[in-house]
Image (cartoon, rainbow over all chains, first blue to last red; front, side, top):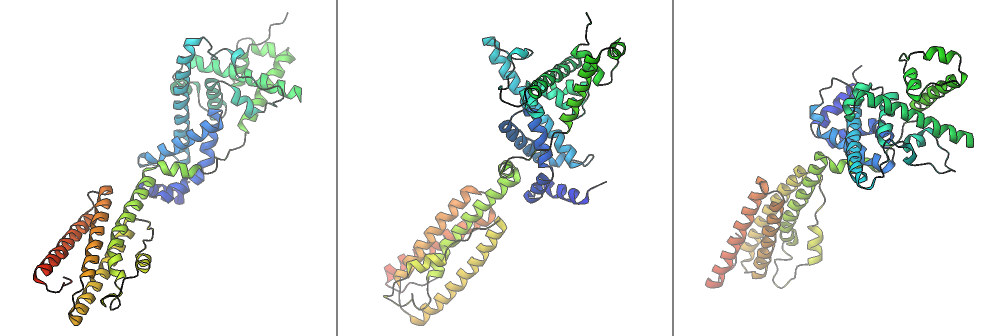
Amino acid sequence: MVDLNEADLVRRARAGELEAMRQLYERHASRVYTVVRRLAGDDDLAADLAQDAWTSAFEKVGDFRGDAAFGTWVHRIAVNTALTRLRQAARRRDLEQGFDGKSTLGNPDRWPAAAATDRVTVQRALDLLPNGYRSVLWLHDVEGYTHEEIGARLGIAVGTSKSQLSKARAKMRVLVTQSRAEV
Amino acid sequence: MMVHLTEESLSELLDGSPVANAEEHLAGCPACQGELEALRRLRSELRDLPELQPPEGSWSRIAKQLPAGRRVRRWRRSGMIALQAVAAAAVFVLGVGLGRVFQPGVAVDDGARLERSAVQPTASLAEAMAEVRKRGAEYDVALRNLEQLARREGAPVPSLAQQRLASLEMLVEASRTALSVEPTDPVLNSYLFAAIEQRDAVMLEMTQSQESGSAVLWR
């Protein structure tokens, strides 16, 4: 069903009206922030990503044709923004770690560990995963992306996406189970 | 010793993909059944994680990055500067308490003058320009009244001419400042030219009056 009020807000936002943009933001802010926060695993980074996503969305709102709901469109921009930034960060980290031999990627022993007293919730366990694993897990299990779509967005092979998903699930399972056993 | 399903196989099963010999193994292995069920529960909990609210002040930070937000701020700034130019004229126009100021030997109250010429912030360039036109009209009315008074009194008042010159110098300077922000703005450009023209006219009149010893006229 077409939301006439939202369609009007989009039209006004395309004309550059700041108040219309603010109202669109208010409607979808939590949805956008939630997805970037889950993908980022960090509050500060999530705030930056959400800001980038919204800025990008309003700069491109002239391209929005209304084929999908505005919320779906901006959500997609948020996912793309987060994945792009996380990939850039991963490339930088890989480059730096390539010199000191301390890469954490693919090596669960070097993943950040929760403190003994830290009750690991599902959210916390998700935050503790490496970016790549967390992205695949969230996109597949919550956002409903296929491995083909994930592979295309992350620049990895389908097999790698499947492998990362199984490792992410296994790690989550260990983190949460250990925590619950301690409580 | 029983070999349990790998994490890859369990993950495939969770997604409903077929895994060779997995069904037979699961039927006889409570451990792997439990593991698969735990993974299923975990996935469900992930999906049930609550929606989050962005930090306070997020919209303000976003708005500052938006072209519309930047444009509004720029307009506000140029609008303010345009009004400062108008205020320079108003210092002269409103400061002239007709009759009171025109009397020789009576000083102008600077405090009252500045207070009356105070500039109010405006929301847009359009509002600023409306204010320019309004103040411009007031300026013209005041000048006409001063002309009439000057003719009626027939007395030279050089201090007022000097004050007018100083105000017009301020107006020229303020107009130039406004144009440094909006160099192509036609209203501000015409405002600058008009201010320069009037300033030069006053200077010429003052020079001529000093040479001839005649009274200073307002126009």
